[in-house]
Image 1 (spheres, rainbow, N blue to C red):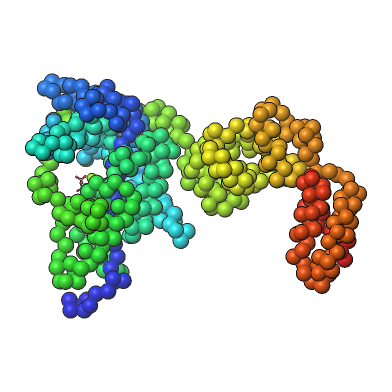
Image 2: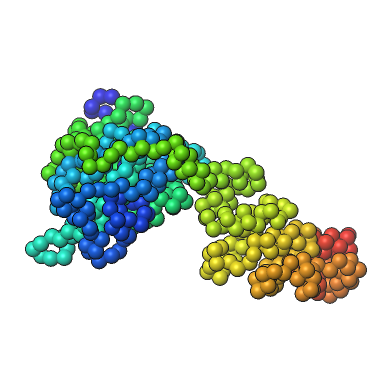
Length: 487
Ligand SMILES: Nc1ncnc2c1ncn2[C@@H]1O[C@H](COP(=O)(O)OP(=O)(O)OP(=O)(O)O)[C@@H](O)[C@H]1O
Ligand SMILES: [Mg+2]
Ligand SMILES: [Mg+2]
């Protein structure tokens, strides 16, 4: 393309790879027994190791390794059963050792991928370059005093994994789908609370652009420390436009590290001092290499829960449910475990899905409770669903009258209790015929209208017959009787 051609936006595409820092939810820090919990008063969780006192030695927290491996397995990575820690040297006030313990040449996991579903229903595969273990740094507090900055070392040594994607992301939407899926995964695997506001999940977005249709990569700019999915999208949109303008103006993109200003929605270069990227990595001599034995790896694999995406696929294949129902069930662990508990008792599996994602969900919303607090035994729900499927009770009566009774009688069998409470659909066809006659004679003008073609009034008749039957009739049966009488 000649430089004086006006370049339109459609001629560029965005290219991005993310570095996602996940704070692991272990009790203690990665190299000491200090608490790793969030929200304590400044410098309450600091032993000699966190303070980097001379002679203090790190000792690896095994749980950190197990959680990283879980994440690696979920992201289809190769697990490096032999891996080791490196020192990344830099000077900063919140890093008392003068180096961060991280992994460089031999990370714990490599070469994986994650599939995400986009809003148009398409599936996109995003490569995972690696996952490495590292410790978090402390926190500088600049807003406590006019003259001085303070340092809080509670966070120093809190375990992190950094998940580095390949530059496979092509839009802000893909980035946000990836982060949403990651957050779901870390929670599902009990690896992290995934809370972006509290910084448990932070993201650096590397962004470049290139002419659409070309394959060479452009120069990347790295936007640091994005703390919400929304800000990732905003930073990407801003950078895409900024870089386009630079190129359209005949300029060149300079590789740089950027800050994102959430108030303005803009990026700006970080101080170049912090950019000095001469980290002089070398293996940490204080820590032996990590060896993950075959037995241990097998044990971690065996303890992995089924993944939401797998569960959703199975639900679609085995139960014929739609994608959104499948997502609802697979993403809510409590709901899924209720589903599994009720499943053996139902005659029609699809009905159980319908109830849980429909009527029961609505009921829970109404009461403002979650399924975990729902007092109805799963077997009782199963029994109730069967009664409705068998047309022994209407769904409305089941929901409004039978379920509340069952909740207070956890040992009751739905069919028996419904019979005892006289809630079952009356099997008496004669009685129903009588009600039909009664209604039709009461609503003669409407019957005349019906016969002239105003078919909508049928609903009125059904409703009235149902009232006379005190709700204990099968609507379809009433329909049939009515149609017959109205012929
Ligand atoms: N041309 C490019 N455009 C957009 N993203 C890119 C491009 N090239 C590489 N990336 C992405 O940049 C990220 C590089 O992360 P990586 O951790 O390897 O290195 P780094 O950013 O130099 O190191 P640090 O961890 O110190 O920030 C990856 O997510 C990768 O996919
Ligand atoms: Mg990185
Ligand atoms: Mg980086």
